[in-house]
Image 1: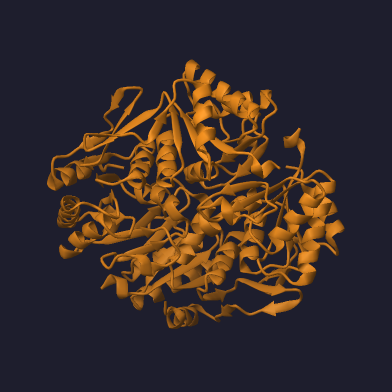
Image 2: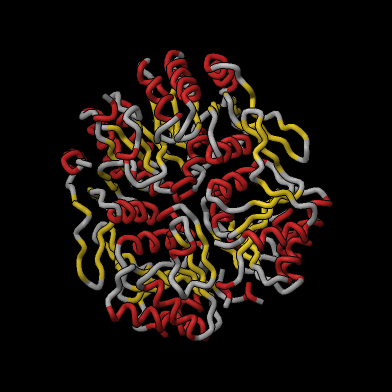
Amino acid sequence: MINKRKFIAVIGGNEPSTEEARMAEEVGRELAKRDAILVCGGLGGVMQAACRGAQSEGGLTIGILPGESRQAANPYVQIPIVTGIGYARNLAVVKSAQAVIAIGGSYGTLSEISHALQSGIPVIGLNTWSLSKNGQQDNSIIPAQNPVEAVDKALNLATN
Amino acid sequence: MINKRKFIAVIGGNEPSTEEARMAEEVGRELAKRDAILVCGGLGGVMQAACRGAQSEGGLTIGILPGESRQAANPYVQIPIVTGIGYARNLAVVKSAQAVIAIGGSYGTLSEISHALQSGIPVIGLNTWSLSKNGQQDNSIIPAQNPVEAVDKALNLATN
Amino acid sequence: MINKRKFIAVIGGNEPSTEEARMAEEVGRELAKRDAILVCGGLGGVMQAACRGAQSEGGLTIGILPGESRQAANPYVQIPIVTGIGYARNLAVVKSAQAVIAIGGSYGTLSEISHALQSGIPVIGLNTWSLSKNGQQDNSIIPAQNPVEAVDKALNLATN
Amino acid sequence: MINKRKFIAVIGGNEPSTEEARMAEEVGRELAKRDAILVCGGLGGVMQAACRGAQSEGGLTIGILPGESRQAANPYVQIPIVTGIGYARNLAVVKSAQAVIAIGGSYGTLSEISHALQSGIPVIGLNTWSLSKNGQQDNSIIPAQNPVEAVDKALNLATN
């Protein structure tokens, strides 16, 4: 049953480094191999690389788009969700997942990390933000050394 | 390819009449038979009946939920999208579809009809609202006599 | 105290007829004279005419904008609220009011009427939509013959 | 003219420390003394303390609420905006301001900081988050030593 499969979000910027794009693609492939469903923001960069990886292994990809048109989805999105609510769709991206893998990214990615942590959704980080408050480290973002470890951790933590 | 399939929204209330629920289930079955993907608001009533019909024919069902939890989805939703934006998710339901079938419904359904018409997305109506402005009939809601005709019309008009 | 004043939304299209624009301006003036605060979508047409009327009588005007920039507000908006959520801001326009006056308008206005009725917020209509379902008239939109009557009714019904 | 006044958002958690609440109240007072309009999320904690401070000096306070009811606003909110979009209202809080002052706060506050930085809106921090990416410090959050300095910096940077 499709709804017994795990939903994992992959988040990251529109303009990743070569290394980040490579990691995103590998994350997508690994998720598909393990039968997880990929959720993302549906646009380019990390999102597109992850979808391409997932599709190459026959995985299912969902893109939750900010704008008014399904045409904006990258070509590897199979299920485009058209929200029309701009960056507020960032919340839907993370809330629709049972765990989140963050790869690089800028402030938009940081907003998604924040919304996930606020909702109690586990966040695994690859080359991404780290946080501290009042000089004290916040260790809520779980680090991973590579895409396979990130997917391992995400699937283990995706229990709700 | 999944993204060559048509996305059709089925909208309607949480408390349909017996006849409306029966129509919704048949609409769901017909959409699945023709390989269309069902988009709905993910909750009960018309949404649940349509998903149940679609699933009985092996169709794919997407539920775009208003709240914070995937647990709120009806048991026939295969792809729950968790938006956390309340009734603003009504816009995402219709914008994610290429045509909309409205069955009965109350003011929430009317808001979805309005958002669809505003976005130029065709709306087919079964026992639903009709509109006039300044005493003049507005014929934008395309009537159908039965579920099969509604699905026929929706698929014919779902061109974008 | 400002928060003892009544909040009334004025909704309607970007491209009103001359008569609708005139009515909107008079509604704005009347609201200001009676110390009500005007809430609207912040853009042109009916929204701008209503704000201009309110400002001419020293009233307070709030514009809840769909886009990303306060610069989009019409020049008579004193409090621009920048939502970035597109047409989903229509919900915020009506929910922020204790009663709604609808003047003319197209499908966007109809979506606002629907959201207001769904939330139990009274809607007064001037030359606007009328509704029926399954051939039966729905009388939830309270008709007014002129701007003064519309404002009278809105203020009387704005009890929550 | 009200719309020549500057709009400054004050963000922070529902459960501030005593010191954070004291700072929030002083920030509110300072903003009001300098004729700035206070924008916040409308609820308790830092939001309520800031509104109380602003009101004590005759300032104007706007609360952009997540839920469906104006009754949820703290008693010092003069202009309640009811969005019904849950935490997606965080975006509206920061986008409606020309600069943001963050006081303490948890992940919700971090999401607001992120959305502000993404939109190019200056963020001043008092005892709040600090950010680094890939081991490199990100200095986008401008530190302030005390409430008066925070308000000084916010007003100087609020140019758009």
